[in-house]
Amino acid sequence: MLKVSGLTVNYGATSALKNVDFYAYQGEIVGLAGPNGAGKTTLLETIAGFLKPREGEIHLLDRRIDGLSVLQRRMMGMVLVPQEGNVFPDMTVRENLDVGAILSHKDIRERLIDETYQLFPILHKRATQFAVTLSGGEQRMLALGIGLVSNASILLIDEPSTGLAPKMVTRLFETLDAIKESTGKTIVLSEQNIGVTEIADRVFGIEAGEIRFCENTENLDSEAVRDLYLGK
Amino acid sequence: MNLDAGITGIIMGGVLSLPVLGIAVIYGMTGITNFAVGTIGVFCTFMTWHFLSQGALLGILVGLAASFGIGYVIQWFLLTPISEKGGDSTLFFIVTMCLGMVFTGFTRVLFPRPDISLLLPRMGTVSIMGVTTSGLKIFAFFFALSALGLIRLSERHTSVGKSWRATSQNLKLAKIVGINTARVFALASATGCMLAFVGAVFWAALYNVNLMSGWNLTFLGFIIAVVGGIGNIWGGMLSALVMGMVMSYSGHILGGMWQSVVLYCIVILVLIIAPRGILGSERSL
Image 1 (cartoon, rainbow over the protein chains, first blue to last red):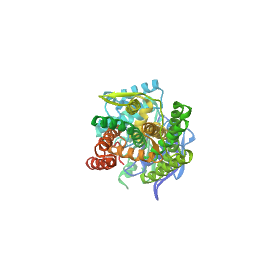
Image 2 (image 1 turned 90 degrees about the horizontal axis):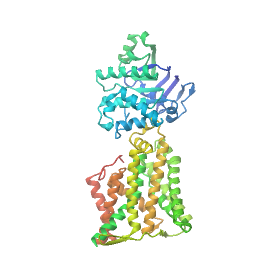
Image 3 (image 1 turned 45 degrees about the vertical axis):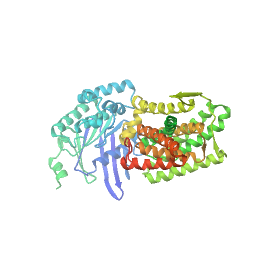
Image 4 (image 1 turned 45 degrees about the horizontal axis):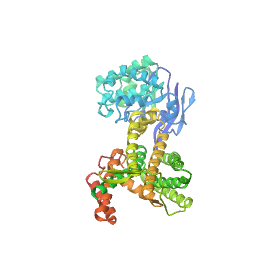
């Protein structure tokens, strides 16, 4: 479904990504694990169209998309849930979800928002509250909600667990697993939190802009994961 | 005399609030301080004047269409591409000043007249607390209030309005969810230029406009917008009304020569006390 090959991205003279290969099949959760500054956000933002690669290709549904705009990629069914700045602060929860579903017909929009309220009942409770007044955890749920109501077939979620309490992180991962099971969406999940290996079908380890390993979760070598975070 | 000056001030503020609204809409949405807004409004007012002999409605429609089209086109083809290439506020200042010069030049070349006054259909007179004023002035004031109310209502209750608010609050996320932000910017610019045009039309009908009126409207509009809190529509409206009163009363009490002295001293004073404007800016300059 999503295939990235030979991707190189530079910030000025510095290489943020070096010859990165990455792929995700339909209905999978693919983890992108790595320490802070490894290049996870850069990879997701390049796939979403916010950064231009210096080299390499990105294909979605067998169509080359690295020359397309963010809007065109969105139209093809891809949506990014950014790590920061992921809600509209001075709009209510309901308005945030309305805007998230702006490309859908009104009837479909209502259904998508209802489904999101079922997944995150707290959002229903806070529907008339401004996003800026929500707690950190609630804002993360709203950010995911915006991603879900967009009705995209592939969600690129950037470090959703950052700043959340361990209990919340466990709940968040369970919810993402439930989303995959119930919707069949493809989820690419970048995480510093090693807990991502518990819900991902496959994990890519990234460090210093390079892919260090790619393993199905059941074959994942715990030594390799430890080295990724702590160094050899 | 005092009540007369008060009513004149409120009406002047109401008319001035239209270009201020235009500036607030453009800046609030795009973050661009467009110094060409007033000259575009005046250029289109000259167009209206040109077509006025064939009917007031036709003249105004031509002006509305022209201001909307010019606003849309300059944003779409010029300002948004510059913004996407990382243009900063200095560059926008230079580019929009140049645009203002271009439209002043167009006005001079196409309509070689020093000044114009629009003769719009009479609307009679209205008496308020013993002070008689023209119906057009009252209409201008309520038009400005309605424009503000309409913008605020559409922001809250229409899909287009929500995408405007979303774009102004979080551009990146707006792009992510699929809002065509380039179109939103172009529509905001078109609306802003149209509001400046309507303000200039009222100004031309109540007083007169000349080649420099566009610059005067722009600078006065910007100063009023900054005092109200640039990008803040309610702040802009309130500031316009206060400034209108200041201009009117200072003119009555001290004479016309002192108007600008009093006005700009108050502006400096307000900005020292409240640097982000009376009601606070919705964006930082």
